Structures are given as C-alpha cells and as structure tokens.
Image: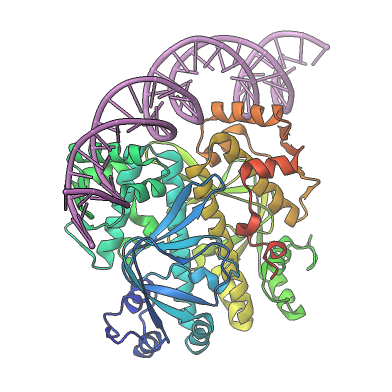
Length: 249
Length: 249
DNA sequence: CGTCATGTTGAACCACGTCAACTAGAGTGG
DNA sequence: CCACTCTAGTTGACGTGGTTCAACATGACG
C-alpha cells in the first residue's frame, strides 16, 4: 500500500473503520492496509473511468475530490455523487460487470487501484469485511435517494443549501472540515451539473445564500456562516448519511 | 414459504436467479425457497415500513406494486423507486440500522417477511447467495442513479417517456408485460411524485405523449404504441438495469 | 500584457407551478 | 334504479422559478 500512509491514517482504512458496525480487529486492519494498491495521479477534470467500461479493478480515493456523472444524449451532464478521500466510488463494479456511469476528478486526485480479485481474496480470509464493504455501497445508495428528493422536490435555494449541508457534514466526519468550513474545489458549472440547474442560476442562488448571511463560497473554499440557519432552510436530516453518530442506540 | 408457490415460479427465487452472475444450484434454489417467510397482505396506498424504522426483518414483494418514498419537511413527497413482484425493496436494512425512506404499496400487495437472522443464516450456508443479494442492492442503486439524471436533466415530456421505458422493460423481464403493454396501477398524483412534477403537469404531459401516438395510460393499464419512438425520445439506454440480456459480453 | 477559464449581469422567454372550477366514474346506500 | 359521495382526472387563466442568450468582468497564468 502507499508508503506515505500508516495503517491508522490511511484514508480508506479509516473510512472502513468509521462505517463498520463492528470494531475492526488488528488483523482486519492489517489485511485492509496490506491490500495491493497501485497508486496513480490525475489532474483536475479528468475521467478516471468511463460509462460502459468493464473494469477488473476498483479504486479508492487517496487525495482530492471526484464525482460520479452521466451524460444524456442531448449532451447535458448530471453529477450524481461527490466522493472524498477514503471513498471507493466504483466498488459496485465488483458485482456489476458494466459501469453505468463515469467517474471524473474535480480537483487533482491520487487514487489507489485494487484488483477485484484482491478484494475477493480479502473477503475470503476476512468475511466480516465483506459486510463492511457491502454497507459502504448501501450508504452510497442512501445518498442517491436523498439526491433524488433534493433535485425533485426542492427549489434551487434550499437545494443548494442541502448540498452544502451534506458536504460539510461528510467532510467533518473524515476530518476535512472544521467549524463548518471546508475546501470545495468545484466550479459553478460543476455545481450546476450536480444540482440539475444552469450555471447562471447557480451563480444567482449562491449570491442569495451569501447575502442571507448563510454561506460564502470563494476561491474553492466554503464557509458556513450560519449553520443553524442553513440546516433549517435545507430541512437537513443527516440520518441518511448513516454516520454512526446519528445512528446511536 | 408461501404454499401457493412452487420453487420455480416463486417470484423472489426467480428474481435472484435472473440477476445472479452464476447459475444457482438446486441446493441454493431449495435454500432460497425454504427461507421462513411470513405472508402479509396490504391494501393500496398503505405504508409497509416507515422512515426511521429499525426493522429486524426485510420483505419481498410477492404480488402488487410498491414504491419507495420520502417526504420533505415542506410536506411534499418524492418517490425514488418502484418495486415489482420478486423485488426486496428494503434489503438494505440488513446493513443499515435505520431506514432512511418509507415504503408504501401502490396497488394491493402481498409480501413475504423474512427475519434478518434467517437471511444471515442463509449466507453462512450458501456464501454465493450473499454475492447475489449484494448485486440486488447494487442494481437498485443503479436505478437511483438513472432517476437522478432523469429528474435533473430531462424535461417533463422525455422524463415521463423514460420512466415508461424503464417500467415496461423491467416488467417484461419478469413476465409482467407483453408487447410493450403492462398493468400500471399508479394514479397521476403518484406519477407526479415519482417524476418531481405536479399532478396538473403530469396530466398534460400524458396527453401530449398520447396525442403523439406514443403511449396510452388508462384504467391502470399502460400501452406503448410506438416503442421505437418512445425509446428514441427518452434516450433510453437499458444498460443501467443490469439485466443479463444487456450485459452479455 | 494577452489569453483563457470562470464568474457575473441583464433582458426576454418558457416550462412548469398554482389556483380553482369542473367532469367522469366507481362505489354505496336507499 | 337513482341520488349521494368520493376520488381521480381534466381544463383554463395566470404567476413564477429557472433557462437562454449574449455581453462583460475578473483573475490566474505564462
């Protein structure tokens, strides 16, 4: 695995640890860390995999932001999910032969490629990890459900607020946000593709959110100035993120 | 299991068989069929499970149509998926403690309840079935991705066309549609909730599709009069359904 | 100091929503 | 067999959130 990481600071190990419903044994952690991983670097706005690919490997994001997207025949793009370090955006390819979406970088990214066969071998020696990985894919699906609600039933203003709530909460959970502020390297065009809006309208909506004193987004950095207000407007209920902190009892 | 079914005609057994990437052994089929299942009946438009439930069992749809939905604080409803006989709409609850969505019947439904523990026991004795079940949840997630694109980037006319393409294709795959015609028991209000539109606009769009000679929907029955035309307008690419027929290498 | 991507603005337009009334059928009861 | 009711579907007039197009501003970079 990447020499630059220790077992306890490796983003993917931490991610699995943070979502597993059981406490990982030292052995399981070591096995995860020992997954043979080929590191690769990508610039911003590059495809990592494309729709209709038939990959024999999957990857984990070690550094940077990536997004999952599709294009319509009419030439429009829709982003369906954002991924942050520790995520494994194409884990689904383990059981779905053909990719039904592309994955692109947002910022420059470092990824770790893992052969499907290595993952399957891991599951054979450590069956509990298969459950944890399954749960990873189920949490991703839960986010997709909330995005459908967000795009289908919220206006631009509350929709954007909700997206920011989600991103800040997720980034805080992996230590990439403090005090409701985080790096957010996407352009307004990409935000538009994620929200099902146009660039122009994203721009105006962003200004509304700013002049309402809720958030500022400039220079690739998001600052939430009024977290209470933002979550109230968005109607943000973090249950769907299935973070352990919201799932207690 | 439900006395009224034989192993080879049981909707759920057929479903698992139809999506598994391997051929089920007689033993595996028998084990699936032998899952202890408690049958229950529901009238139309009833909740089967609710958001925030913490179920210790999941269920398969034996008869009827169901939908997965969420409500916003503003009181709007968004349907995120439709489910047909053979599906297991809340399989996710096996690894996610808290449900982040409700599931309601559309038409009268018969369901088969299965304890989580029984499913886990099944996986222990038949490990390959765990892979097949995982794949089930991944296919559901693939549909969610396409719905995001549909709602985010298509206009009412093409959006509705796409939904009809999906439903007809899925229903044909389980033998519930012939000649691009099938029962579709949902009201226009429910269609609106699925498409992120209002009832009024669904009504008008439906009339447009009909007067274009593409489909007719009346009395709970959908008939596609011009399949080529409908798929062309919708830009329908069935890859995302991950049916084996479209996945052949 | 020019170039290129990204962000910003204004004015016109339209897809879709809102409101409110009306119609059609499918039970139900007398 | 008809009146009563309830739900689903239909229609029209009007309002608006978001798009479109096109111009202009800004800032990073070489």
